[in-house]
Image (cartoon, rainbow, N blue to C red; front, side, top):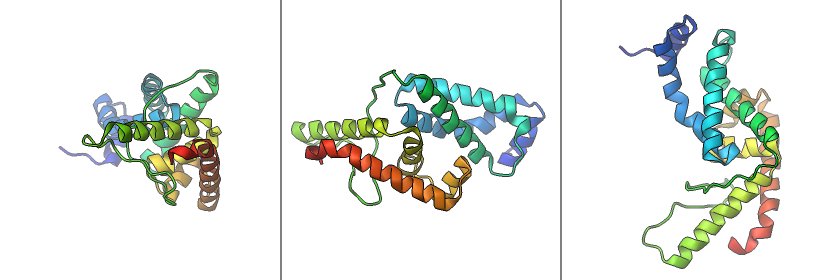
Length: 193
């Protein structure tokens, strides 16, 4: 029998573990993807995801349902990741970005690897992805969060406002500043673009 998210949430709050597992399974991949983009390390992203789900389970009764469950969950995810980043400031993380990343102004567009492309083009694509990754990692925590949520996860301004608890105007302003910071960070890689 299919249950709505609201029904799953209600049953989860009543202590039905299977309902909680079903509720989480819907969002599990997105939570992991957000964590992976913010933490830039697969193991850290897995650990953060697990920590998020534990926090959600322990605090489910505190969820007031003033916003959607996903908004609450993604807010916990970004905050958990920011906490991990602060704890691991000196730790160097390596990861390859293998998905298409496109900015609205088109200044840094990347595509998935083309299996028929020549070797030089493949190397250039990898260098561009790595440069973008490194530039994102150089951003401050707030800018990194905005770039990940908007540009990498494709969330709307409204969704980001709900997740961060800021108004839409503030979100747009922060995203704009984050894009400028990212563009400035990419200047040292201008020969790749």
